Length: 188
Image (cartoon, rainbow, N blue to C red; front, side):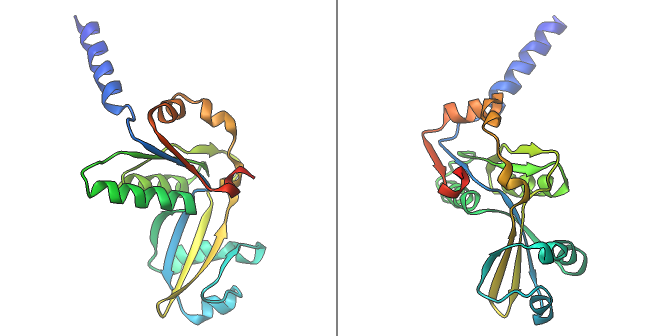
């Protein structure tokens, strides 16, 4: 009887946790690290307001500096993930929760956990591939006087492997959805 009860509970949990959404995205997930900064930070890292650039070696210390010296806001980012988050936000208005999922590659680090938490808080099921050898991609959003500059460090976001689509959760997501969305640069 106990064994049957356990099996029944496990089946109920599996049924309850099954993804039944309608939209999935695949792209480069980035943990946006947003902070209000002074002109000195922009000058130090040679960044201009109203720009969006890929991080170079000289920009690598920027992310740690933001976290250590400024009140930051963490946001699940990357163009495709942002689109999926907005779609879920719109669906929430119609009480359609849990309708979106996102896949991409992240590192096996604290930023990956933060990114997953942020996506989940927005109602998006994040099924990230974990790259053990590369850190999670980040994007510094430097805010000054209502303007911003973005410095993206793609890192693990560049390392998605098609084998991730063979995981049970990925198959479940792919089978459930009606709409698949990906930015073209994710395929390169």
